[in-house]
Length: 173
Image (cartoon, helix red, strand yellow):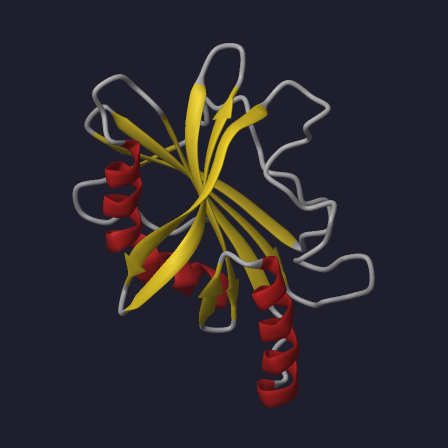
């Protein structure tokens, strides 16, 4: 069960996107849709409870899209976003298929730490294991369909602003 919808948003079982991030080694994966007015946001959580050789969160096989297949990344940048009390640089991607264009935000969560950098995530994983014995980590993605005249980044920011605590709680269960 995914994080509950916060006020102003409702849960949906609808996932109309022609895209799912690749991570074949995640211990748990969740896809949950949310709706507010005409805006649909899909949350993808890929959680690794243990880090084992070949089954790590940060690995070359874990990525936004299989570039050999239909969905293709048309824009890939970093975006500075305020989440809770932190300012975080996240991956901000535009991914196009034959019938839709998605704005996708992605970042890593290692313990209580967030980063978009796979290098920083690897270092944080080692630090969390040594300091606290924690081996759990996650990759978080948010996706919204891009539409004319609609600020996709604002929709995603509004969503994460009210749902970050419930996302963290879902990962900590």
